[in-house]
Image (tube, rainbow, N blue to C red):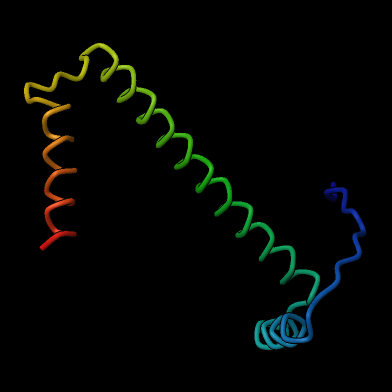
Length: 95
């Protein structure tokens, strides 16, 4: 039994059309067949990329959750460091 196919109009740039014709001629296939294969390959790449982004998002969520359990502690003098930085900048202006 044949798989159902759909007719779709696609607008191509001249260079895209030329490349499709070249591939079809070289492989002895129709342009439609080459386009179908290119779409399959592109969809597979998009799915792989989406899976990678989902994996990265899960890792980031895990890291954030882990970080929330370990609050940030700063043992230095935050305000004193900021004051010193401003004083150093002021000293540079008047040098």
